[in-house]
Length: 344
Image (cartoon, rainbow, N blue to C red; front, side):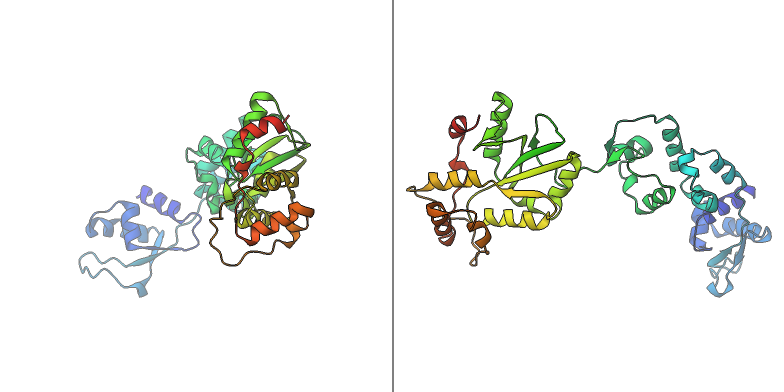
């Protein structure tokens, strides 16, 4: 009998709905027959733990009549829970939130006790990814993604910084940054080959200057992925630098210019500009050569007036003519052999 009351008390803890259905009673009390359930339910009713909701009707069994719903009237005894809360790490208990909601403590008791042990022995742990910390603490990599549990942590003041975890960017862009600095200039390349070639020059030869610009690293934009709204901003926060200046370099075609425009719109707070010198070299190399048609099948092109204005003279004319004719000057026009000459 005492076991049944304890189970009902645990079931009632932290629940807004103060009723329990017949099927829930069967599961909770592990009953396989109406006869067994009737005995336990009758004892619980006599003990004042539950009361029938007569309007719900019965199971129709005349020998063992059981109502389809009962009101939970079990008296909550939180004295043990409050004693445990008083022993928790100050970072968990100082807000007083759990003291006012002991039922919530019981609901998350196991997880909170694991947090408690972590905080008492934490010291200065190395920050790790959210899912890594989640698995480390709870044995489940998605525990720190549960909205209700995160809401509880927020009320307790347990931030990501306190639990020493971070969120990796949605797009984990491939990058090569030899030395992380407080202020950096990073080059974003639309295509993989030129990204790899610049990375190779930086890694193998220690080269960092191209077209008069010193680079601290190179990032592979993976086509249009980099232009997804907020993706580059998230990556920038992950870098943790005081200031990052981005230069963008892609194909000269409608799709490539549109990626850059979308990148600007989606991350307005970033220091981001077109790597003009690289585009000028591409335009010079394209003069007099057969240039392929673009694979962009959109009939209407975007408004690139602002980008056209960055260039002047013959190069501006080549750029406008190429875009008007829906041509494509690929980044690959500057190959590794060329990089050996122009990158120092």
